[in-house]
Length: 192
Image (cartoon, rainbow, N blue to C red; front, side):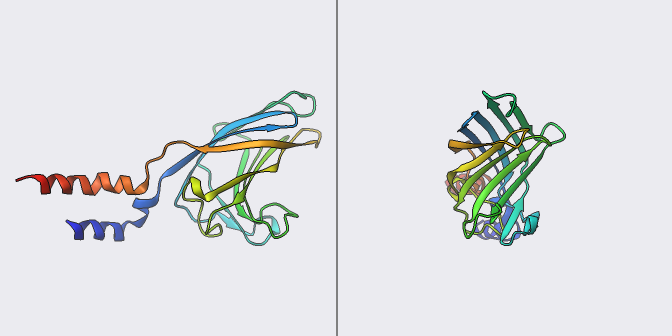
């Protein structure tokens, strides 16, 4: 049985690692608040590298996203929803040198746009392999960077004063393998 488990793990390494990872975000800008969530698959290769002519970055695919930016200055920063469920919006999930003028600092960034406004959430880079794979878990997301922005319809820019990222409960890949392979094995061994 042990040989079977090892053989299956060798044949399907992504089976043990590929899980959707969902995060919730909550933050405050100079004009209001931003709340939402996003999901991505932990095992994926970059969609593109060196985007926008910047070197040392890679973009990855978000599965879903849903954010609401609320504002107390509606004429300049209208309340805006960024969602994968509605057409007309874009999202970019980038790691590395993703922000023009960031110098030698690497970030993990999420940028959402709908044609008239945009939202950029930046986090200090904590992923050990940002150019080859997306963060594999919550521990590979760094602290929130308060230079994150909400850009209004007139070009105004609201900076964040705070932001919190939290992951929802996701089964660890090892526990998935345990339930698939080890529990039946243990039941078999326990039988007289």
